Image: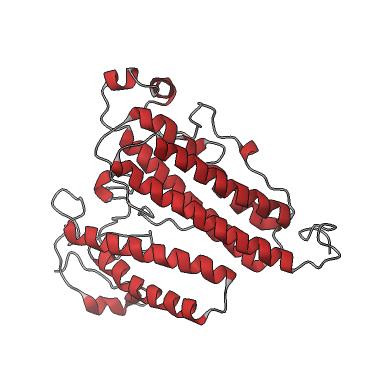
Length: 198
Length: 121
């Protein structure tokens, strides 16, 4: 089960609101490669995982992604504070505002709400780990794109932190794939599903 | 009459804490007049965030390399340091989890600022 710690994993302190920036960063909240997708993916894959070390990583990284979700929400909350109606009306944020005001709602930058279809749980640990490696790279690319669109150092700082975490997670999932493969031998490498076949 | 006393987090289990009565003012040491964290608690939070990050990294490493002696030693060093920081925050009226409310008279868990507010960072 989960205990909540009342602090962000990394501080977010943004001086200047920017609704236009919020409109793109929101993809890391509710988009296909965002933190909600990541946490749901890893936390659900762990149930059918046959190897303790890998279950540990899926649990701990999945939990950390919830903390990252909170950081993104904090960024969005701070970017949309104290806005005038004029600032909202003149930005792409207006289409989000009309449905959600300045509430924080998981959608992609395109306006498509979060969908569990973004998450794969195939019940085969080799398949699931390969999905996880791809997911971390897709998240990293999304952060790269956000950095291309963002000048504000107060926003760049936590975004760069989150981007680096994706790279570290990629390394850990690489370790997990190696561990899972070590349990197989040359005869059954692709002939079985270690999560199902005995 | 004592109207406010603080228990150390360790002593809460047994009520021997009743020997640790100290009267402290209702506004806790880690908060300024308007309730927002003061500079010493901001320092403690900064230390805790840094420590917890090192801890998170160590945990991920140990998940994959559970027999690493250096990693296990580092893990225990961090856990030990963490105890005193969380305790200092708790004594000053800032609970990191809902298990850290040490006051017998105040419930500070729901106090502002919440982590997504700039004042909490």
